[in-house]
Length: 398
Length: 161
Ligand code: HEM
Ligand SMILES: [Cu+2]
Image (cartoon, rainbow over all chains, first blue to last red):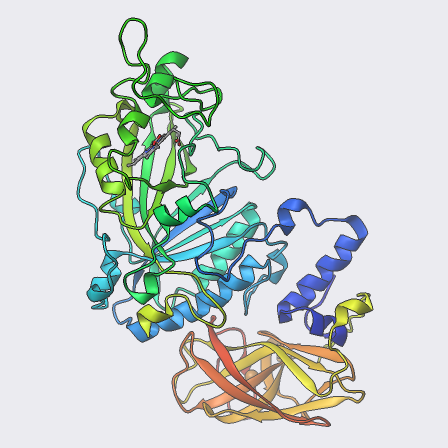
């Protein structure tokens, strides 16, 4: 049993970077020496410092918590900056696999496990703080859509902290630290947990599957590409949003009971892609480009008029988004119907020019709407990354 | 009745970095922001102090703009309850060792606060040592934490922190 109350060898203390990290790190190091416990999943680290916040341009992690807050009535810009000071330090430490300062359970910092957390701000925050002039271009509350069945408990919010990691314990521990440091400033409006595959489950770079069974994410801009930069990262406008992006979050329920009544060919026509490997119905491999003009010998379109990818494909250049949806599983009712779906996220430079025209088309026609229902919705502007000794969103709140 | 457990770690020497540079090094300092850390109230500073000298060093007190009184405190059992009280003669950091100041344990007590100390604010604190140079640390951030278990014991005066 390691007591943190007493003395620690000076050398070890000087080497480790956290007071609590000393004890936890030292104990971890000696354990690891005994039994090589540093697994690949534990040791993989995301990058905190850089032009962008982390957890967006990154292969999706295993588990996530999206936590939305409403600020307390008296909160000012100066208070927001104090909150951001705490979060900046916390997220930097957690991303490195270290406990936060004043962590009551530092022993839970068992590895970085690609922990990430980014912070975003809803339109309501800008109006509460009188910061409307700082709103980025193309950022506003979404209009109501015909398909919506939105619930308050999954929607809106002044501030978002979107946390993710490859391990549920690391996620829970990090979430606790970030929420603890948020409580002087805000109350929790909602928290929405989600998941994707565990690390090692599918080869790196391969597209994940959602709970409908579909390969989901194929047409996304490639991570690390200049295409990604031009779809996602903002490079003009107010200083604080440079290097940032705009998030559309939709909680979309899947009606799996009726979906599962469809045969494979029907399911594939709904999307326009094969269930087996995500290839378009006009191709063989996932990477094949869909041929939207191709017809069957009988004259019918191979990728039907109502197919999701036909409707979602850009009509004007620039109508593209980066999707990074986690699944959610919120239990089931007494008849065994599962309450599942997507924490669907789309990142872009301009919501009005990128997400909105796509959603308008899907609202008018998309057979997938028969089995998917948006029940939560929110938009957040995500400030650029942190470099050196800067604070998150420092330019917005100082 | 101060409990100190010694911890001898078998960390390879190459991990030790700059352990031999002189003086006392403070790391991961933070100060508690709570419902008690209002003007006239109290709080405490926590973190790790490492004695990189060849002799024992004693933490005897400190100064900070935000507090009228700074004392070195320990937690101790008095009448079946954990209370905090000033450590007679200060807190010894043996040569080459570190001490951890933490909630529920030893801490640098700040009393008679001259201003409210709110979460996310930063303060500057000077640590006074016998046997080593005093050190001043800027940017010690106030972390929100519960008032805690530190019942103050000092003869006539009893307060919570
Ligand atoms: C539960 C809801 C949804 C499911 C299950 C779903 C599923 C899919 C699948 C399987 C694909 C094909 C593979 C891929 O490129 O990722 C796809 C493509 C796409 N989806 Fe969705 N989707 C959903 C909602 C939405 C929404 C709400 C939007 C936008 C408003 C959207 C926009 C897109 C776009 C832009 C593509 C790429 C189209 C292209 O090929 O250019 N999806 N989706
Ligand atoms: Cu005390």
